[in-house]
Length: 232
Ligand SMILES: NC(=O)c1ccc[n+]([C@@H]2O[C@H](COP(=O)([O-])OP(=O)(O)OC[C@H]3O[C@@H](n4cnc5c(N)ncnc54)[C@H](OP(=O)(O)O)[C@@H]3O)[C@@H](O)[C@H]2O)c1
Image 1 (cartoon, rainbow, N blue to C red):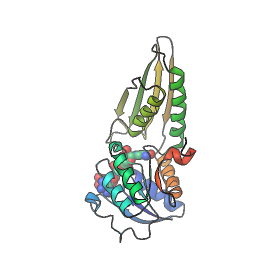
Image 2: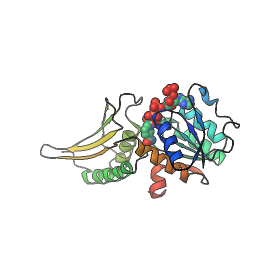
Image 3: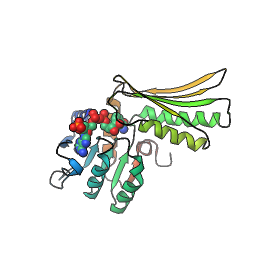
Image 4: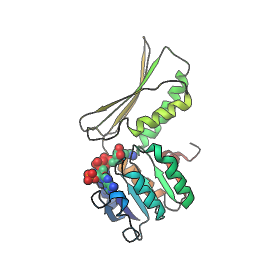
């Protein structure tokens, strides 16, 4: 497969390295300096590319997605902090018959953590003696807070208990690739469900698996759709 890497930071580098290890061709790598308002994403630059993998920043991602979708290139993005623009981008994908897979977290463990969290929330529904909280911690260079994963967890918990508050505490320190903890606590007991990413290679592997899966499909998908099907 011929892959375009949009954004050559920590994640873009990890995906490019893994793609080459797996025998894919990294046809082009697009950096911030050349790509203001997505201007480096030209038909010439992207000719023959099967899929683009986008890991940039919240202020750059939407322009990149719009340009890639307009060019008919399937795109996988892991950039976080742009969920308000998802309806606009979805309309564009649907209007163009394009393909987009987006996920704030490309780890299989986190997807299973979400499922276990929904199960816990079902069990604790209507039990006000328990307070509930979400805590997330990431490396100090992460720009957005709360993390996209914590916000998605919160949305998933609301599907189980819509009226409840699920407050998020964000910590930015050290080099941690990311941890998320859901806690239910009463005077007498504490239940915690926790996921910790030990390295960002796990996200690179998930994003690359998504890039291998997406070409040939049309529509907007999440990583959960890919792993468990769209009725998940
Ligand atoms: N979905 C997941 O599993 C997952 C996992 C980890 C991270 N993330 C998210 O992915 C995003 C990137 O994370 P990261 O750790 O790779 O951050 P990073 O190391 O800061 O890399 C971001 C890169 O994007 C570049 N960039 C900025 N604007 C650009 C543009 N218009 N065109 C091309 N490149 C551009 C930056 O260039 P400069 O350095 O020159 O500014 C930087 O090299 C963040 O939103 C993060 O939250 C998601």
